[in-house]
Structures are given as C-alpha cells and as structure tokens.
Length: 304
Image (cartoon, rainbow, N blue to C red; front, side, top):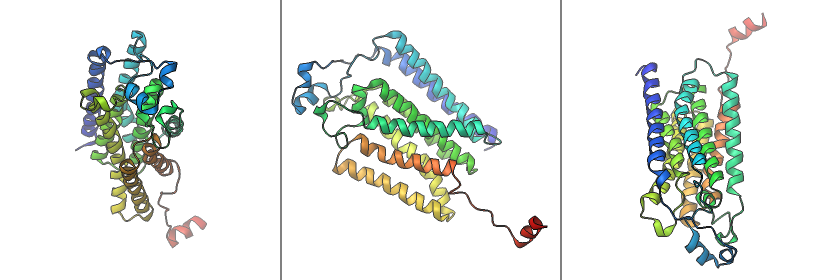
C-alpha cells in the first residue's frame, strides 16, 4: 500500500471514530437518564459496606446539569478526536521531525505522566479504604468527574502521539500498530463519559460500555507499544529485547495483582508508568539509538 493510501486509511479511521463519538454524545448521552445522589453528612458517616452499596456508581454531583458546559465538552472532545488524523499526518508521515513536534510530544508525555500520577493518589471518602489497594481511577471519577475526563484526555493524547513519534523516529511503518493505537486511545473517551456503574448494574449497557472501553484502551494502547518492541526484538537488538521482556513482565504482574489483590488506581498505573518511561527514553534520549561505527578509511578522512 502506498504512503498516500495509508494516509487516507488512517485519516478515514480517525474521522469515522470522531463522527461516531460525536453522534453518540449528541443523540444518546445528553439524554441518558442516570440517578445522581449527593452524599449528605450523615451518609459520610455510614459504615463502609453501606456507603459503597448506596453510592458506588453514583456521581458526586450532576455533571451535565448545565447544557452549555455539556455541549462545550462534546465539541472539544469531538474536535480533539478529529485532530488525531492530523497528528498521524504531522508525526508519522512528516519528512522530518521538527523541533515543534518534538516539544509538543515531550510536553504532553510529561503532562500525562504527571497528571495520572497525581490523580491516582487523590483523596477519597474514607469508606472506600486504602487508595493503594481499593480505589480505582473510575471510582475516583465518581468523586472527581472532570478530573477523570482530564485523566482520559491526557492519557490518550500522550500515549497516541508518542507512540506515533516512536514509530517515525525509528522509521517503523507497522500498519497494525497505528490502527490498534488509534482504536485504543479513542476508546477512553467513552470510558470517561460513562461513570463506573457499580456492582448492582453490572449487566447493563452503561456498565459494560464503561468496562469494555477501559479494557480496550489498556490492551490496545499497550499493543501499539508491544508491536514495535517485538519488531525490534526480532532484530536481535539487546536493549530492545530487555525492554520487551520488562514491559511484558509488568503487564503480567498487573494481571496477577488484579486477580490476587484487586482493582486499584495504583495497580492500573503500573503499566502506564512503565510505558511513559519507555516512550520517554526511546523518543527523547539516545539510549536506544544505534551508534554509527566508522571504518578506518572514514577515520583517516576525518583526520586528514
């Protein structure tokens, strides 16, 4: 497939995703009826089990009571998704990575890392227990809905643009990697618009869409990085081979912790922290760059 055809495929995919998202937000989510309950002082004194049973799945306050705020959010998030097609063209197909592109990717990578770390350690009503083992990013979203949206936007934008930057810097043209990264990073926009529904509402479209898109973001976002790492692994590059093993080991560790310990923002952040560190080292340092070995003739020519 030629470069122009690849551009059209990627652009069409991103535009289709943005259009579907805008349609869903405009014709479904705006009128979605979901119970909002604001905890009273008496509620805050309830035992943990009673508090969770009553409020798990309920927003702390009506997020979309103001129509203007809602439509501004819809417009912003939809336009941002359309911009993903622009990012692909400006990063992946650029003749040369400009300083502006490098700064843009570095800044949103650092911002994404900083925000998800801060967000994961936010305080929460004591009834939910230890933040390291009991409180998930989605549960924090019940108490801090707009922070949850910022979390989703920054996580998506930083992983998406920096995965593309990694591909372009290394002249990697993996179509599958671009496609899964696009789908994964777009899916989190659904997750942050659908609050965690709670155990009583597990088998509902709302809860299933929340969990499904969160898992799609986690696995496809990681897949975009893993596909590139395996490409380098097959080239017998020792540094990349070690990086591949470490990243996959962290993903396995996260799954083990989810099964043995349970969900928590800390456990959810583990692979994201490693991904951020890996993307930063690959994109903005020379650690993984191959050093050019000059021949004796080249050395003589330089010294002449």
